[in-house]
Length: 126
Image (cartoon, rainbow, N blue to C red; front, side):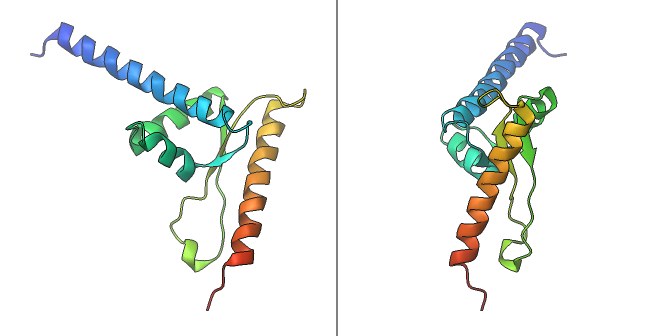
């Protein structure tokens, strides 16, 4: 039988770490003038703080369920991008009095459009 007090401390510490991951995600998204980011960018930024992919996915799932962030998946038919995570995340907050969800969708769409234009202008399939 496990040590109840020890188990409780581990659970409290895990909750604290998880809370920190959620805060880090929100701060990261706010720190870029409320711009959307690819999940790969968020992951790379948070890996420097020793946040693993599982913790990130869990935090993002909960933040999305709460309506704090929006995540949209994108697709590009280029075979070089098969298996590449093209999800983009944005914070759900009102920008200049607009609907928060609409603001997030616009930020995500702007990030996708810019990335896709850059990618297609530089990529040459042979």
